[in-house]
Length: 187
Image 1 (cartoon, rainbow, N blue to C red):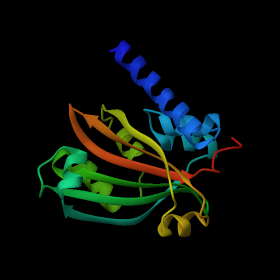
Image 2: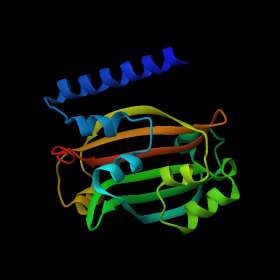
Image 3: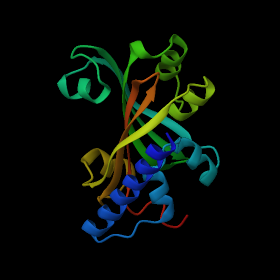
Image 4: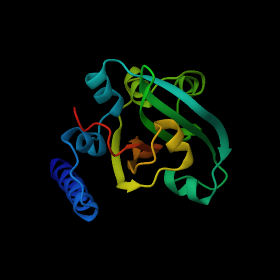
């Protein structure tokens, strides 16, 4: 187990180094931590800024199409919860995130918290003491969509990552987190 964790860490460091070289960028240590952590980003932001808050932009149930079914390893047509949120401190948006969650893999209590409250997923997992691990799929730079331009009030490039949260050897959630490339440089 320790060897595979070390290999995963080495792979993430290589991804960051390659991304920096290919885009002629130098990421701050905080950016690197946020992009590579296999822990809760919420916890990191809470340490950096004090307790952050979350605003849900959109949340609905949908039947998984082929693309989304593959992300969470379910059959096409399985009901998933789509959730779109902004993590922020006061009025400052910090991170935009989307998630796809197969509801049948969550307890009633977790589903209830996901649906009715603006609670970050990291806090929900901690509150219910869910044993889980995060496996990062991709770390990349993307162009700002119109929605991201509006949220962050910038048209600069965005740093992004997507990963899965695994519990009981099944994908509990797929998550994508995005923030402007100029964020978290000073910390």
